[in-house]
Length: 310
Image (tube, rainbow, N blue to C red):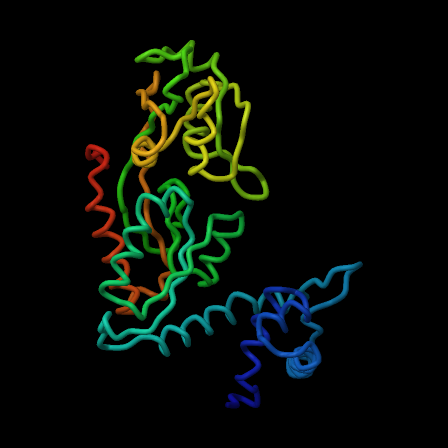
């Protein structure tokens, strides 16, 4: 297809080149050879009369025109994609679709496990790719590369729709044979004991409860750190360490592991988990149906007493 002498087939290649800033990486994304991608770049340079990508040291950098094209090109492709996949009628039992969800392992355990089971019953042709959170998730959401991001409400992007799923509290988790901890835990004991805590991403960012504690002036002696929530309860077993864990998750593990759950010696605000999606998907009936499933399954969870979201 040509529009104003521009070959519209080149738009996908242009988007990949501007995003990856690499002929090799763009060719991998496009599933074509590097020579074909290089040829497409040459045609794009001829059309725009601009290099678009320039070698700067060992890296390729976008020219000013390349930078100005990146977002408009991505938005065009997102709108085309939305128009192609959207159907006026949607039958979950017959639909064939893959959705990409970014969420922590905590959310996978307390919510998405139930969603996966329901999809097999009601929509066997719908598949999910569930990936953990990473530093580049906000950019991936902005570019429409993920269908849903599920995370704390404090992390949301104000430019895209958001829906609250549920709220959770925190509990202190200890090994049942930990003799240093009784039936309650004072703030002094909490600070004195060794902790297991979670950090995330390449930057080892703190979790929500770590940031809340810092705002309250509560410091912890973190002796073991891990990159996921599910290992926190496991890592206190056989030790005198403690961990601060989402109550829903802690209750699940306490059913199977030698653990005790204690209230925290301080008051933390509830953790409000939300789902967010790119605005381009608002009118997609398949997307809207899955949003409803996520919302319904979140509300069906009754492991923790309801927490007011007001």
